Image (cartoon, rainbow, N blue to C red; front, side):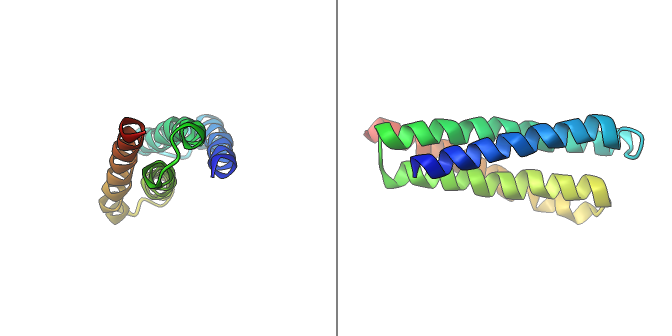
Length: 122
């Protein structure tokens, strides 16, 4: 699991940096300032949780448990749902996607709670 979460975290970091550069250079003239801010929020949370996945990769080696593994998967799901919905929202303008975003936020919160629990119990 440690290698998998390290690979997923590294890939998410790569995609996050690329998305940030794309937003700054390719979308600035195409999106409204409001939608560009939405894009930047998606990038920011993706990058935060890419680092969180690297931490989980390490934590799995130090405190292996179901909670540690759950934290990693919750960060992956959170990134896909939270950042993914915001990326699509900013590019498409489909407002109802904003209703999905909090599900990803809950996954992030649950992932952090699982990580706390895994370390505490370890």
